[in-house]
Length: 329
Image (cartoon, rainbow, N blue to C red; front, side, top):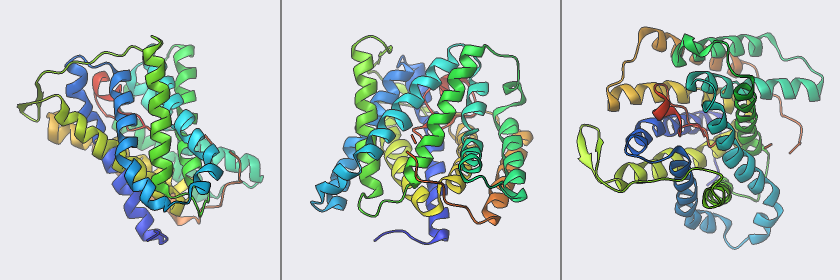
C-alpha cells in the first residue's frame, strides 16, 4: 500500500529523523573502540542496502524495467546522496570543528529553497523566510554557538559540498516516480554508495580500520556487532527507507526541514543513552526548529522543477567529534 496522505507523510518523516538521530549514540562506542568513521559508514550503508534488498525485490514484483528506468535516481542517490556526502563531510571535519561542519551541512533546506527560487523565478513567501530563519537559529542553539567561528576555507568548501549532497538526497527522494518503490531506491542507493566507499577503502584512499572485541554500550559490555546491527537496521535501513518515502509525499522542501529534527533527536539520544548533558539552550533550539517547520508547512510547498540531485546518508550527532563523525546521512 502506497503512502499518499500528508499527515502520514509527516509521521513517516519524523520517524526518519528519529531513526537518523540514533546513529550518533550507536556509532560512538564503535569509534571509541577503534573503528574509523569511514569503516563504520561503509559497513552501515552496504549492509543496510543488503537488508532492504529482499523488501525491494518484493516491492518491484518482477518489474525490473522500473529499476532500469530509475537507474539515474539510484546512481544519484548512491554516488551523491550517500558516498559523496560522506566523503565531503569527512574532509570537512578534518580541518574545521565538527559543530561547524554540521551547521553548514544542515543548511541543505535553504539550498533547496534557493534552487526553487532561481529556477521558478518566484520569490518564496514570507512564511518560508521566517521558517528558514527560525530553523537556522534553532540549529545554532542545538549544535552550539561555538559552531559559528572563523574556519579553514578548504574545510568550509567541503562542508558546503556536504550540504549540497544532503540537499540532493532530499531532491532525488522527492522526484515523482510511480514505478520505482521507495524501498528499492533506498536499497540499491545504499548498496551503490557502500560499494563506492568500500572501493575507496580497499584502494587506501579512505582509512578503514575496525576492532571486534566487547565494548561499553548503555552502561554494560556488549559484543561489537550489537551496536553495529542496531546502526544498520534502525539508523540506516529504517531511516533511509522512511526518509525517501516521506520526501515522495511531502516534497523535498518540507521533508528537508523536518529532517532538521535529526539533530534534536541526536541530542536527546546522547542524553538518554550516553549521559551527555542536554542544555536548556538545546531545548529552546529544538522548539525553534519546530517553529520553522510549522512556518514552512503553513505555506503549500511548490513542486521543484524536474532537474536531476543529487540524506543523506546524513544523520547528525549533537555532541563530540567521535559521535558526529559518522552520523551525518
